[in-house]
Image (cartoon, each protein chain N blue to C red):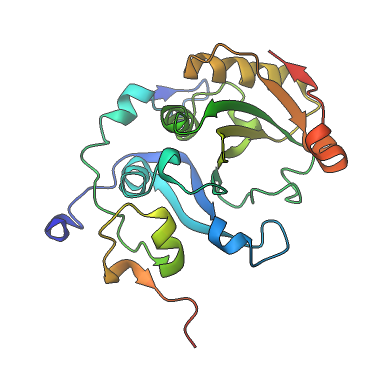
Length: 188
Length: 59
């Protein structure tokens, strides 16, 4: 049993920020009308060891059910447009065929918790959304109008992921007004 | 893999390669971790024992 080892692992690598995993359970969605009402914080971690302890015991995107949203956001920032820190923000999105986003998701998480972004203060968190035909990973940022910061983050993210397709940045404000018809404000 | 920023404070930056070294060492759920049983089914891989489960919907 692994329980004999519990408590022996040293918490020796603190992170710059604490981060919270949130899960939106697809099976609960059909019962609840309001978007986000089934979203719950799962775990807040502050060290490298805690991160892996959880990550190693949860499904990666390819094994999550269709409809699932799994978020990793800085502690105290809720993964919602309505959160005051996110309200004026936006997101970069990368898209993968179903079952192909696991590596991207992990590398995104590692870049976040390892503070690899030059404009790391601008970042709210990341979310992977599992849908019928595809998996989307989005990086949420704070000040959508700060083009310099968004372009820097987008470029660095593509490099980290070795992602070669064009990606787009959508303002939450536009998404609120136009839903799926919202246009990219920046593309790289 | 630690970097000092200009002010001399430790900026806790970790490269991907550095972080990946810990992946195989940390296989147990963190101490104190608890999860509602309905979410556990959809999210956890396996073997989340009763120690970690809480039943949020019990009366």
